[in-house]
Length: 236
Ligand code: UDP
Image 1: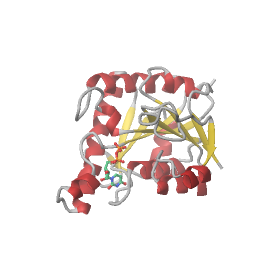
Image 2: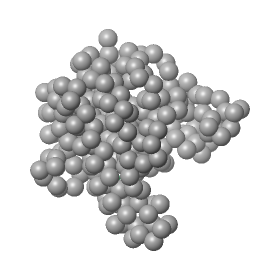
Image 3: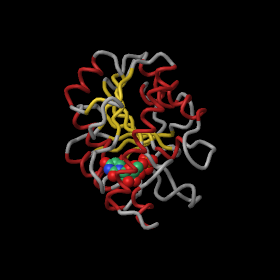
C-alpha cells in the first residue's frame, strides 16, 4: 500500500552526474527511471522537479563574471535538459510522462499550469516540472516547494545522496547524528543546510511536509512510499 497518493519528487542535478564530474550519467538516469517506474506501478501520482547543478548554476557563473540573471536563465535551461533526459529514460521504461516548463518553450514542453498538471497526473502521466520557478534568484528547491504546493502533493520527497538530515554535514563531520524527524523551525534555528530557506519557509507556511532520503540506493523510493523510516521527516 502506498503511504502517499500524490508526491512531488525533487532530484538534484548534481546526483545525476553519478561517477562523472559533469553532465548526465546514463546509469544513474536509468536507475532513477526504474525507481520512479516502481512507484508509478503502485498507483502513486508523481510530479518531479530536477535541478541543474550538474550542468550550470547561476551563482557560480556570477563568480566567474557572468551576469547573474543570464546565469540563472542558463541554470533554468540546464534543468530543462535534465528533465528531457529523465523524460526520455522514463519513456524507455514504458512510463507515460510529460515535461511542463515554467517558461514558454513549445514544442519542448507545455507551459505549466496547476490544472494541466493535475489532469495529466490523474490520467496516469508522470509530470516533470522544468525550468524551476521561471524566475532568477530562486533554486529548484524553491521550485519544488512551489510546484508541490500548487499540485496539492501530500509530501515533497527530496532525494539526495545522504540518508536524511544530520546535526552537521556527515560527509565532513563524523560525529554528526541523524534526525528521524525535525520541525521546519528547527532547521531554520539550527541553520541546517538541507534546502534553501525560501523553500523551507514556503513548505512551513503551506503545510507541505518534506521527507529527505537517499535516492542513490535503488529501491529506496519504493521503501519511502511503503512507509519505511529510512530518512528524515520534516513537519510543523
Ligand atoms: N534556477 C533559477 N530559478 C529557479 C530554479 C533554478 O534561476 O527557479 C537556476 C539557478 O541558477 C540554479 C540553477 O538554475 O543554480 C540550477 O538549479 P539548482 O542549483 O537548484 O540545481 P541542483 O542544485 O538541484 O542541481
